Image (cartoon, rainbow over all chains, first blue to last red; front, side, top):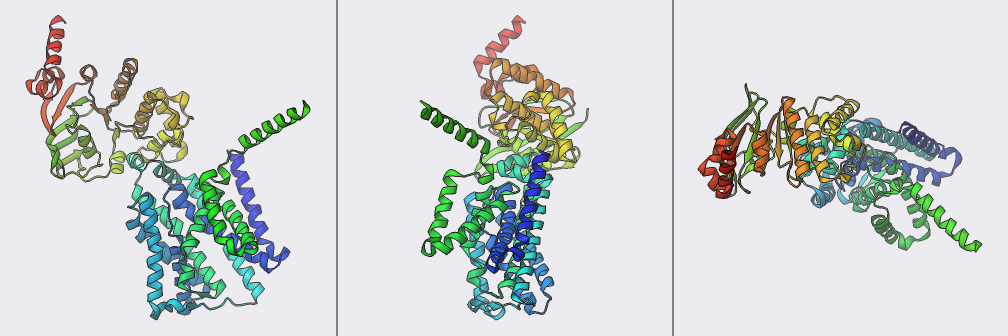
Length: 324
Length: 252
């Protein structure tokens, strides 16, 4: 068990180091992909708290991300230093999630999923209509990060990797501790969890806030990176689905699954985007269908030893058949 | 003996139906009390009211001197009011020991996961499930699932344990084992309320019986007196049982 745990840590550390060295080994395009992988890893690890450990299919990721974009941008426009704006966005989104969780976590299953989609839509509409503050549909220009383009992308990569590492640390802490154990109980049987003395409301809100606050940070950093945000981009349903699919692809409820899923998905998406521009969305759909039918537990939940022995057995049979 | 739980004038309505109607009783520390009555009499609803699953419509519940009428299930569990379900409720994908550990960690006194798992193994040994501690809970047979329910409740170190038909679906040999286990739990000083349809079980194990009918308490007292009560015979036991019981009593 401890050997496996150590293996997970080493794997994660090597992966972060690999992403961190892209500015020295690759071109700008590679660095951009590394930033995306770090960003989506942080988002997928966050989603894993509520969607993986707790089993609540949340689509609110885009709401937290978008809100983070706008709180960060508006704080900066109001004169806050960049880093302060990022922290304000993090705290603001955490508070929002706590207040929202109190209401929306009364819903379960499909109803919760629909409710969380509605949050994204409502926020998008509010931000679009409140043009006096947010610029409405015209979007908002965010003060650029100082320095040349290469320095900026290195800085963003560093910050995104830091957020990813924090998200991973939080995941490990939750997974090992009392909170994670309680969340896994809630996931399997909420009534029984209540009966063994778990304060399910408090635990679910904790999970919801943990699934939200780093999405706020990521949103604010993203806004600083791209320099321009608008309601449609910040509160996108496809974006929110993507994060959930990544986590499930890697293995929801595992520690490393979201990281694996985010990496595989970003690379696949980049490949399909570059080579099949018109079919991009259809391929995303096909991946989702494939996942549901063949990989419901994700890449990390596959029984590789079983697959290997099966493959060996098949190979053995073929070998014998050839010998006859 | 001191009173551990006191229920006074408890009522619960679902729409126009009064599922529990003006029920009052109290439990003394360490006794085993039977709760009997026909299907739909409100036995499970009463347990649900006491453990906070349903909101009380009117009345009062006092547990160890504290008014707990408005408590939620997790608070009941932490206070020491544990219950088992008629239909067992395990965490299916977890191992047996983790199921029991959850009880020790969240409802009991354990302060860490490690301590909870150690306590869980003790309780599993107590109910005779230690050989299956690491098996997934979903793989257990029905009698073993009932044992798991018991171990999970015991890990919470309850003062009062409400057993909702723990013997339903078990065969005669399994029931004898379960009865021995319930006696052993009582010997630890836990007050037990047992909902049960098998009169043989009720008569052999309880020191007092409560009879519910249409949500009302129609009789209460020492088992053999309650069984001979005309109201109880009419509402639940039936004339045939009464005649056989009287004959058996006469023949010794």
